[in-house]
Image (cartoon, rainbow, N blue to C red; front, top):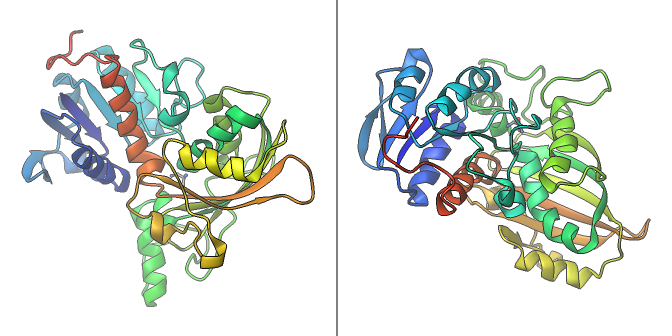
Length: 337
Ligand code: 2RA
């Protein structure tokens, strides 16, 4: 199957290539795409060199699937052009996520909404993905009413330049500044731009995307998203109120059986999820399970996942796997128009 990776030279694009290889996705021809300045350069994948294509060259090759991680404006301009030639686009930007005509998918939660007519599919925001994977089994059983979430997000969520800023600061070196303040030895309660309501775009993504993915507009979400000087993954402290009462052991059992979830929770042995342990893995790690003793039907939990993998690349590839398994993409080598 011809697969285009748009943004192949970025952090998420590189992770997408890694995940496609690790999961043996049946790529017969890889079409890496990057900005004009990289066109013609070579990238290596599975021991072979591939020439970086321009967008138009990639469209002309008529890939069956194009996974995008190239920013919202690029996706708005080019994703429809891929779709016009029959390619199915899975886009990691926020461009299409809240558009009613486009599906927003986390396979463990709502892959069933996908159809062969979906040609531009949105990959949710990383901090939303890990939260809904953990909440879905509990929502099915107890019905989520309200979520209060605080996030502790890795600098890899911003990109390579942010990692460089943190490492330069740590080494006492000068360098490009991505954040408005020092990030090393600090935390920034500021991810993406501030809106008129005092929240950031990142926080409103968690509010709005959660409802769309879980298919329940009655779910109330309030979020504080924070950048911290780590790599490896995003962490989240989630306080979730249910419509119905729960049993804590039953919650633990539901999570242990849930797809894509690993429960890591034994505080006596100091076992709990951490970015260092989630780094490079595809699962969502849950721990610190405990009842909120200040109000009924309410649970506290700690959720950690690698934001570049399950938070982006792996979720996108899992969507592609679902489409392929359910024959929802044109798998002919030359996609029919
Ligand atoms: C971040 N979730 O962490 C956003 C986008 N990747 O910066």
